[in-house]
Image (cartoon, rainbow, N blue to C red; front, side):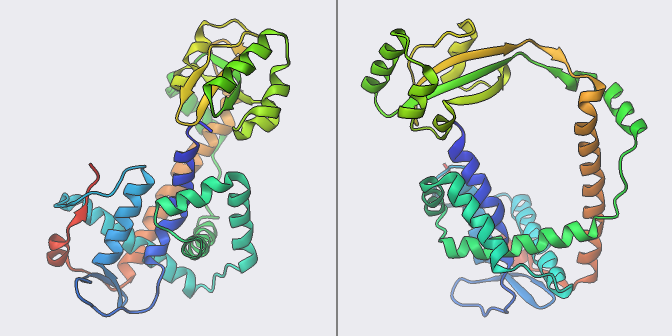
Length: 322
């Protein structure tokens, strides 16, 4: 439940961004709807830019505010993102890449299952309907298929490259102490006190978590796995003082009242090359793929007829969060 709302916002937003550039039809300029760019004749308007920026702000958990002048560099960067998404989506269409309703349904159903009512609530926070999100999801999946197809030829990382990276970045493989935790989260302090009393009487923490906890991890007896000491949220700070097997005092967060139990401790250590190898390979492969992706997208943009109306962009005012 901790950092859950932020994770949902990021999850929804990551799929939604493409919706703003996914429409392939040409648009007319109505009222304050100004054309700020064209990609092969398809228009991007100030409305697209404002929607994109407002969704970005809401995804960060901030509220909309009054209109201010926003730095021109930021506006140009946002416009380039919209142009890039447009170019990729048009390329996916040219290559006949298709995403069926069944593929979309699987992702939507997984999100609804994993996040439950919180998912719909955060869609509302972002001013999105499920239909809008589904449309964004379909287009994003098309682009993912396109990128996967184009980057499939990126060569694998060699053992020598992995070893060299490990030796040059030893500090990055120092793993801090970790705490294995379990929690019970309930809506009221009185309920937390009653559960704490039951624990003192010898009742099983796991069973109480399964029965009373409102956090999704309650189904697993409140098990949270291992948490690095430098990533502990405020609700868990007390575990530093506990011995293995001990239960902490009641703490409060926006999610409710927490009772945390320390299940185990892993001491700080240096991750070995053997352990770090797969992680390093993924990182280097990701860097390699990203470089190829950037070069490929640049070529796509160069081969497209892109017109940017910076004089009009300069007059566009974006909302800025307080």
